[in-house]
Image (cartoon, rainbow, N blue to C red; front, side, top):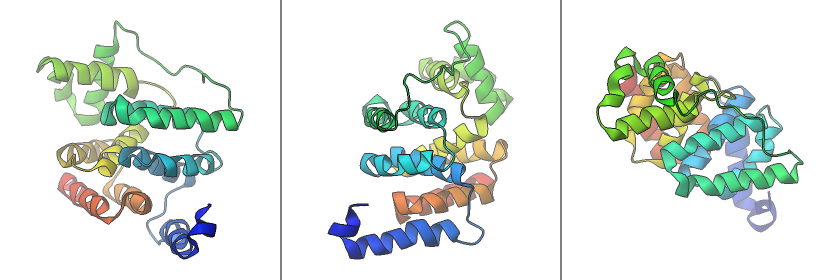
Length: 227
């Protein structure tokens, strides 16, 4: 961390908070791969590409596989759009090249152009309930949501459905202004077994990277979803 030389007082306090106090807070801990999966997702969500570059090598050394990283970045396109996702894909490829990780990685797709809508609607139903099997019929955006967001990305291997819902929660939490969707995806997490306690741990571990306002908003959304 170059900031130790240029900004030693800031670096001392931030490092203590983010890498000691938060990590070791009683009843707020996560296993290392889950913690870094959440943090990388939150950094993507808030547009923190410089911090992402800094954290990605640490994440790879703490249980995140290259496939997990790529799947996280790919899925971000649905929640941030290509314009905000692309810098993170480029940064990932640069870090992988520096670490001699060969690209492209092995394919993870499980759907075809012919069945992506059907499989996407099935994934939606598994997360949000049986009523979602017909939701794609409510207009072209809903059809795209089922086929593209869920059929193209949620059905991929490399991350399971609970992990995918967690990273979606992090994307939405970190970008802010998405509280209705954040409540909906908090419910999706709860439906998949990512309980209220787990989601609050996720928020706690991401707080140093997204700040207090968005973290407090996320806690409020978890409470509403749990009610």
